[in-house]
Image 1: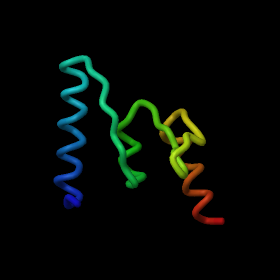
Image 2: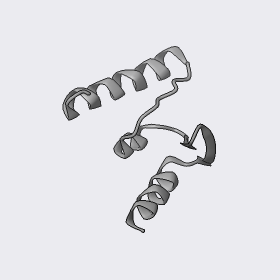
Image 3: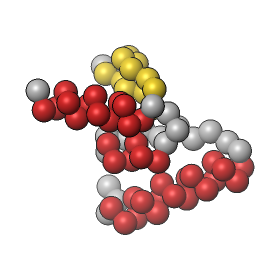
Length: 68
C-alpha cells in the first residue's frame, strides 16, 4: 500500500540488491506495471501456475483478458 513513488523506489532497491548480491528475488504483485522491472514472470490463478515467460507477453495477455 505504498504511494507510486515509494513503490518505484522499493522496486529499484530490490533490483540493486539482486544485482549486487547475485541473488534471486521473488516479487508477488497485482500491479501490472511492476512487470517492467522483472526478468521473468508467472501467472497464478487459483493457486496454480497457468503461464510463465517474458513479463511483457504475460502483461499483454492479462490486458487482453481484462478487455474481453
